[in-house]
Length: 377
Image (cartoon, rainbow, N blue to C red; front, side):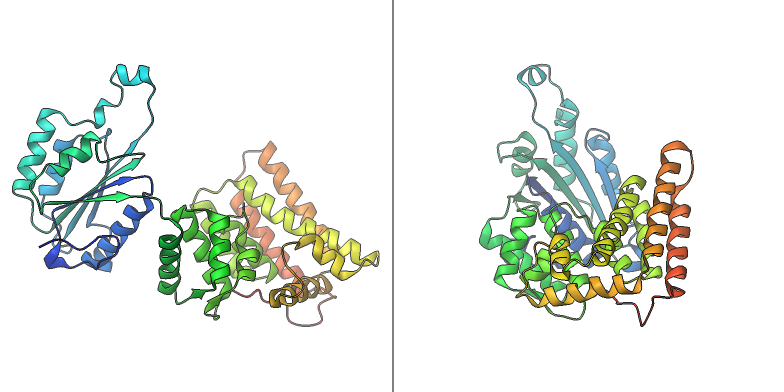
């Protein structure tokens, strides 16, 4: 009996092969499968114990197979062993010199693997991921394909084409309780291409932005999914628009935890306040509001419902912020930027203090006439 397709079928504990081999360019498909496998086999309290990861080339097959044969922890009855390698393009000279041999199978490796799959460890799944331009003729793929049937499932990770890609996006949105118009899906593909990892990040942003709305419109994609805007940048901007101190502090913490460069965080904050400063000065000069808005949001058409929402949001915030408060923010961020460039200081605490002080000052601002606008999402 054939095993279900790991990319579309469900995962059943009583119907899992001992091994999976994913090969090809779209390695996000393998990551997605490992996530589903982990969720299906390992309880939430044992998530830290049931998964082992190895990079081929840093660790040899005998050590990997020893781990696979080791009994799982008592509170994690299943063990998932993930082995990754990246197939890089090599020059003719490198190929002639045999570079990259650490990833090839020696006769001893082949013997150990054949013995393992003749008698695999129970309740253990070995997942091998070979990323890059890899065909079925690749030595590793050919070896695993030669093993006894019903022990290893081979999966080619191809880039998804238009119809399959739209199906994948629709499924991912549905998992978050959302749907999207055809125009929104098409625009999302234009923004992120066929890179599933990038698309998944954009979908996460869209789901947060839409909040209680179920359907994603093209206006949402144009507003949220900018070509160079990271999730952290979008989160910071939305939190600033809502003057949401808690969200700002949490986003700063996440940014530094995920390795975001401090200068990038300062850039996002500084650009936000410099834009507000320019808009405030233009308002004082008597420029038309639609002209000002069009400068900052050229992608939004006036006939779209999102235009009115964002238009109101911008000028509501400008009316509640004094020129002095905006100038204070710009100058404080310039001081923090100078400290980063000239001193060995921890920038995280400086930015946190800036956020707290900005929110405190705004609450006491004499120009506040009502509740600060809260960003949708």
